[in-house]
Length: 137
Image 1: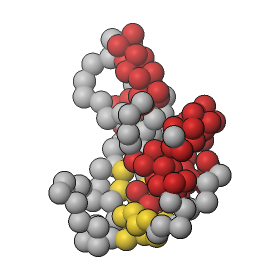
Image 2: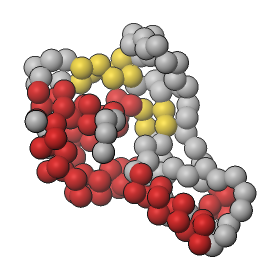
Image 3: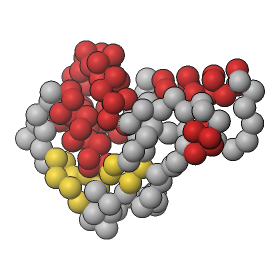
């Protein structure tokens, strides 16, 4: 529910297919599906695990790569070009590297996360029709 990067890319690509969009390709992170994060938190609570946990999908990508993978998975034509952070200034300064490693979860054998691409595929399979309906309304 609500707005997010993927929904924005989908909405703009469907509503303005000829408009060229630019997305930064020099900021990296691990896109994480909230469904998997919620399941991970439940496991940590049930197992009464303690400590500081990083909890994110495995692997990493830049925003541009995420947008491209998502729209391809959705089967939506798009007109997206990569740019640098300097070429796309925003009021909010974002870190170049926000990649997390789930080492503590792995050490205690509780890591549920898959590669972000696999989780993205699951997200699209589950919500594709709803996402398109919302984007065009």
